Length: 412
Ligand code: EPZ
Image (cartoon, rainbow, N blue to C red; front, top):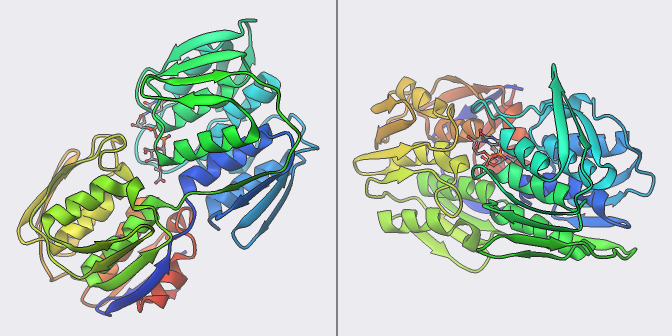
C-alpha cells in the first residue's frame, strides 16, 4: 500500500488510543489456556491481530471480532502443526509455542516472521523450554518441541532480557506443577498477560525476586479482560502534537510511559498529563541525549519517533539504539530530507530544523513507517510512503485518526 501525504497542515484535535498490539497478541494466544470462553475488550483492529485470529480458526476455535471486542471459544481446539502462512508473517505467532507446550506438551511450528529490525533469534526461548524439560530440533524453518522429562518442578533463569522469551517461558511453565522464573522481563504488556492468566485461574505471583507459579484446578467460566492502552501508539500521537499542533490523546495510561514523558517535560516540551489523557502542544525542547533500554527505560519502539521529534529541538540531540541491530532507517530518511544528521552504527545525532524537504519514502518496518508519517506531515510539500501496510500491522485506524486531526493523507 502506498500513501501520499501533504505536509504543512495544522494538526489539532483529540485521538482515542487503541489497545496495545504487544499485549493483544499474547492475550489472544493465551485464551487457548482458558477453561471456557474469553471476552476481550479494547482489542486493536490491526493486521497482526487478524492474522492471530485466523490461526485460532485453523485450530477449530470460534472467534467473533466485532468493533474492538472479541469472543473466543476454544472448546473445539485441536492440536495441529502450526504450518500456516500467518505464522511466518508475524513475530507474535511464537507465543503459540509456549501455549501448545502448556496444553499438549508438544509443538510443531514454522519459525516466526516479523519486522526486519535485526537477527531476532529465539535462542533464549529455546533455552527456557529446555530448562523446563522440553527437547527441540529445527529442520529448515520447522521447529519441533516435545516433552522428554517427567519433572514437575523447575527453577529457570532467562539468559538475557527478552519480552517474548519471558512470556513464552511463562506459558510453557504452566504445564508443570511448580515453577520459578528468574530474570524475566515483563513490561506493561507482559503484566497485562499475567493479570489475564490469573483471571483465568493460574496462581502466578510476580515480584522483584522472580515469577512464581504453582498449579491449581481451573474453573469452567467466562473470562473477561480489557487490553491495556497501546503506549507506543499513544507516544506517536503525543509526538505529533508536539511537532505539528495541538493533540489530546485519550484512553492512555501515562504510568506506562513515565520515562519518555519525563524526558519530554525535562526538555521543556508543552505537555499536560492527566490520569488517562495527555495534551501535547506544538513546542520546542532543549537537545536530548538518549539511549533505548529495557522497561522502564526508553522503549526501542519509540526510538525512530524520537528521531523525528528531535526536529523540534533547539540544537543537536543524540540517541543510541541498544536493543535491535537494524533500527536506524529513519536517520537516513532525515538526511535525504535535508536535515543535518549523523549516523554512527547504532547512534545518531540530529540538528533541530523547521525545513524538511518532502520526498518519496519507503517503510522498512512498523515503527519506521510511523516515524516516516510524522516526517511527511512536517514536509514542505507532497511526500509518498510505500510499504505503508507495515504501519497497519500495529496502528489501529491510523489514516482515519490522522485525517480527523487535520492531516492530509491519500491512499494511492
Ligand atoms: C517484543 O519483541 C515486541 N514484539 C517488539 O515490538 C519490541 O520492540 C520488543 O519486544 C522490545 O520491547 C512483540 O511483542 C510481538 P525481545 P521481542 O525478545 O519479543 C534479542 C513492535 O514494533 N533476543 O525483548 O522479539 C532480540 O534479538 C515490535 O511492536 C535474542 O537474542 O523482543 C533483541 O535484540 C518490534 N534471543 C533483544 O533480545 C531471543 O531468544 C530484545 O528482544 C530473544 C530475543
